[in-house]
Amino acid sequence: MLRVMATLSLRVSLSLSRPTSFAKTSRQLQCVRLQRLGTSSTVGRAPLFKHQAWPFRLGPATVRSYVDAPAKDPAIAATTTASSLSEARVRARAVYETPETGLVSYLPSRLVPYAELARLDKLTGAYYLFFPCLFSTLLAAPLTDPITPPSSVLATSALFFAGAAIMRGAGCTVNDLWDRNLDPYVSRTRTRPIARGAITVQQAIPFLGLQLFTGLAILLQFPTECLYYGIPSLILVATYPLAKRVTNYPQLVLGLTFSWGAIMGYPALGISLLSDTPALISAACLYGSCIAWTVVYDMIYAYQDIRDDRAAGIKSIALAQQKHAKAFMGIVGGLQVVLLGCAGLAVGAGPVFYFGACGGAAATVSWMVAKVNLKSVEDCWRWFKNGAWLTGGAVSLGLAAEYLTTYLELYPVQVQEETGQGG
Image (cartoon, rainbow, N blue to C red; front, side, top):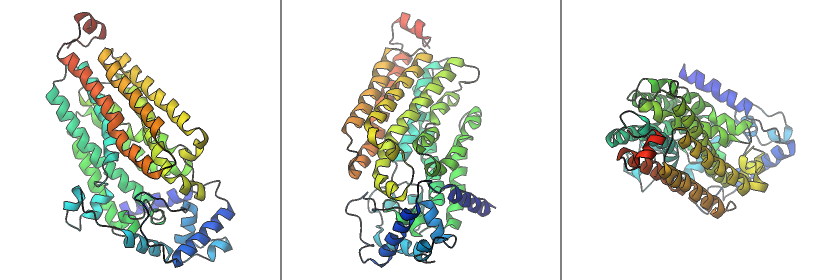
């Protein structure tokens, strides 16, 4: 049943993924390129640097014509072969290198593909998923009565990190299943386990089930109310891969998914959002702030593939805002800071919050937007990777300082009375 559902979902994905701007001449050009790649002696060579993109990427509709059905266009049909996908996977295996450093390098060889499928070798995405959970936990902790002790904050944060690592891995598995016939043609993704044929669809689906059940087991460690908030997020996890096929702003949909933890910290500490209006407003503003943050950092990430997307006619925020990229990111980054400030204002946060969390977010996001070289694939990756700790760390430190100041009753009495966080 799971196999049937996955197959139907993948078919729907491919049917919805045809780019409207993908002209016939563009398809013909890509077919010629693929035909040349199939006979070129340089195809199997490793990229010049780690995250170099190929000069083209097949649109989903084109790949479908190669894999799933005979092409109607004679120019496409002339180059369509049943072995094109398998040949791409052979080339991917030729350039794949077994990890020699990091956590994955210590695993038995048979488990390495599964660890790579869950992105245990690249945890940056897990950090980005975890930080909104940490933000909401630290912001909600002073609101409980009595105030949540540090031991509970640490335990809750640890559970959130475990859940973020598991669910981010599940999201990557879903994404790779959707894109299993696309990834082999893209340099940055061609060595992923499913793309290179190290894991089959029949093996990936049970692994996805294991990931989801593990995530559920972690979710059950939280108060029951968290189930009502956590389970709906699975819809976003499952459907996000479609967004990059049908909208110029898939980063917005990614933000809806990755920022869900900004809501979860409140019920995790026993705060009922439906009966506590200030906490509900705070959670909504924090959620919006994290969505804006996601748009900024993932737009930088998208610039790694901008040439691929342009060649294939695939929609991308990097292409949509190319003429005003930094101005756009600056405006969205400003919105992130404003909404973060509103989240604190709703619950009466003190001066430490505004100076530490809001000031830290404003400084780090501004620095990142000003310094990143959007024309350099390597620089975009570096800022994306470090941005998690740069902005996420600054906001977390500001929120932690606000929490400890309140917990230790370091604010003057009049400030505690005004904020309502006297403990």
